[in-house]
Image (cartoon, rainbow, N blue to C red):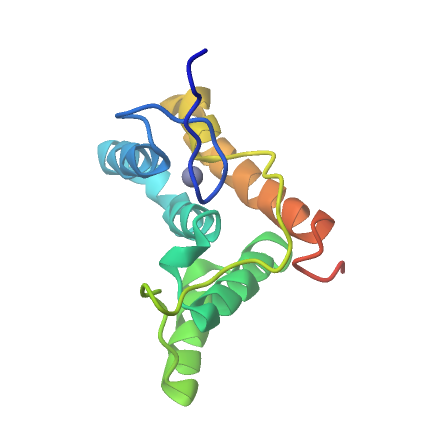
Length: 151
Ligand SMILES: [Zn+2]
């Protein structure tokens, strides 16, 4: 039997040359190809990192979760959210990126229903739609797993 490799962070089945990081680079390439797709760039960055939380510091992960709620539920435009994030960073001097010693992780395991590979499988033409679907699914999964309080 052949062993199936999985992404250690989000649990997605993966093959060489088709890791979550490869998928993320593909998203950025699609955005570069058609500038209109850049409208969901903030969601691509946020969703990819939230499903691979060790890329964040513990404080960075908390800030990112607040951003997800702002984007999905409150419809806050990325520009406004960035200003708020910048103010947070100045006030608390928090560090966003994770290190080997200090990185974000979830208290409860999560069964992600939508992952980076799903965005790619849906194709470039449905990119913006997929990205909004990914963000909405993530918020749902985070609540179902008990990592975020239900609204
Ligand atoms: Zn992954």
